[in-house]
Image 1 (cartoon, each protein chain N blue to C red):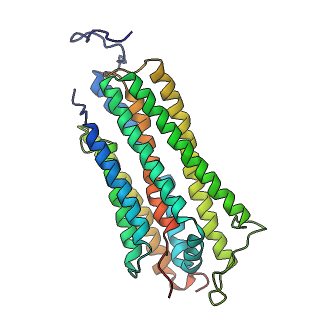
Image 2 (cartoon, rainbow over the protein chains, first blue to last red):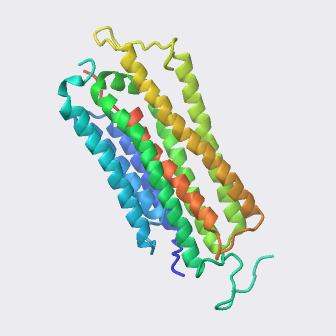
Image 3 (tube, chains in turn red, yellow):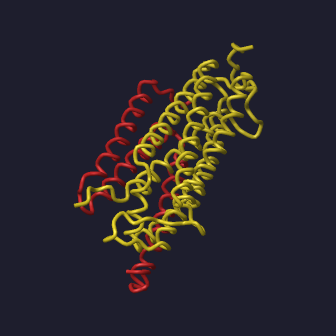
Length: 100
Length: 231
């Protein structure tokens, strides 16, 4: 049996951090950081997602390597979907952007 | 009914299906299956995120103006509600691991409650959109913030279409989640889970956390596009 039982204090700590990050991301959006606003918002969101995946979803403690392979490949495919589509939309037809 | 003696080595554990070598292999197989399903879910939401990304870059003006009409405080509080539900899910998996049945049932019920609160707040927000004529369709009308900043009605509709599509699909996942957790709670109430066998709690928990993560991205992408003070 390799199932880890984590102390409940750890879950409460992660919860507190997630709540704080939610407050911070809402507040920092009202501060003018120029183009950094979006980047900061996405970084905070990714940090929160990472905490949920590692601790709440137990990926940090899982013994099953295949789980990590599945997660990483899913993210990789998402990156292909977003990345390659964006190059198509914004490089192949630069003038197609509607309106502007 | 509880306190069944620990199974002897090579004895058939009650929860073990015969095609698995042991409980750990059985649990890993279920968990892996759920992760693969979540991989397909990432692709499913990924398509909408891509549409959002392209239109946001094309029609940033309307997206920013539309985003500012969403209620920041309500959105942030709802995010917190969802995070609380993820905490109760994580703690309920722990309660199942420890075999604490009453605690498990309580935490699962709390999870359902948080989920319903989230959906209720979402319904309130959608209702607001109807009274503001921000629902795409014939009666759609978006009032520009100032006469100097005209807004293209069609582009604004695209923002609200994506808003409803993304929050709507997320809410549908929440409703399914509440349904799944109702069944899990009922099973827990009947004493179906033991420290040796509680895979359904764990698997349902993975799904719930995933839906939480989708919202963690939706909140900044929809509510926080451009909240900077305008000079």
